[in-house]
Amino acid sequence: MWEQLLRRCHDRATHRYKAQCQNPNRKIEIGFIAAPQLNAWAATWEDTDLIGINVGTYLVLCDLFDRMLGHPNLFPKIGNPRAETLREIAEIKTSIENATKKNPFAPQDAERAKYAGQLMLLAFDFLFQHEFGHIFNGHTDWLNQTLGFCVLAEVGASAIPGLSGLDLQTLEMDADSFATLDGFSRLNLASYNGFFGSANDAAFALLLSHYCVWRLFAEHVDGDVDAILSEDHPPAVYRQRFNISYAIDLLLRDGIWTENAVGEQLSAVVFAAEVAFKTLTGVPIAREINAPDTYEKGGDLLGRLTENWKLLRPQLDLVKRGGVLAP
Ligand SMILES: [Zn+2]
Image (tube, rainbow, N blue to C red; front, top):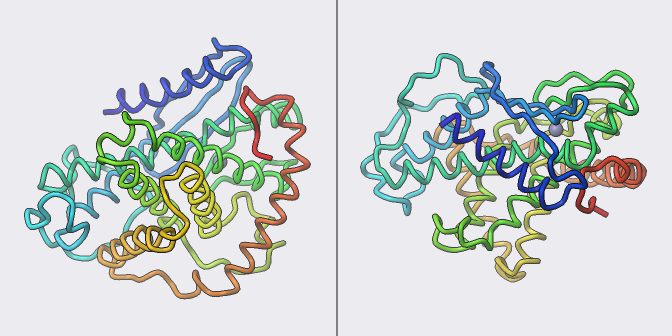
């Protein structure tokens, strides 16, 4: 499995280099790191791009989606939910140590196990493409030029000395958009949506997998926008919203969703994810996470990041690997 995952990442990166890079033979090294947390990092050292993914990233995602599909009351239309065992509620972890070979929560029904595996892959792809976006859109080279060699890490990363929270968060938003665009641009490919049967069913699974990644880290955000911008990453609850709304734009652009069905289709994704988190943990999403001032703050934050993007974009344009940066 580890080898397969690395090959999948490597193939996608080199395919993009060949198609869009000024130097199509550009090298990238991708590896797993023996650490239990969901986390990953990107860097560029001399002529080689580097991506490190914690083993915990794979384990946490497997655990999450296995537990969802391994529960008899969740996802009733997938396979045979009656084959699954009712389990006690437990916390969903973002760090997994001492993983056993056979996940005790793995679904019993083969179809449900496969569906859980696909959700895991979609979420894993998103996290990998986020790291690759840091490299492909020139973030790592720009950091090397402006601050010297830096490693862009994700969860729990401390700020990079010399780099403002605003700049770092702007890069994070761009890497998120890169990963969202990559995933949703594949939906019309028969090879991509073949497992799900239709682009629409694949869209449900893709959006659900991304929603769940952010949901793992959702927490109430204290402080105003200036306080938020002093951190290294935008809060997960805002990244979730920015990315889901971008994904909806892409679904409408490609005709996979239609304007008049957006509400219903989005609700289906949010409902499936929230019911799953509540069923597995016994804890509903905190009301303050969805409070009106959170929406307001999110809008202000997005405005500040978008404004700053206009300043960073021309600098990144000079060092990006290829393609076209977001406007
Ligand atoms: Zn990042």
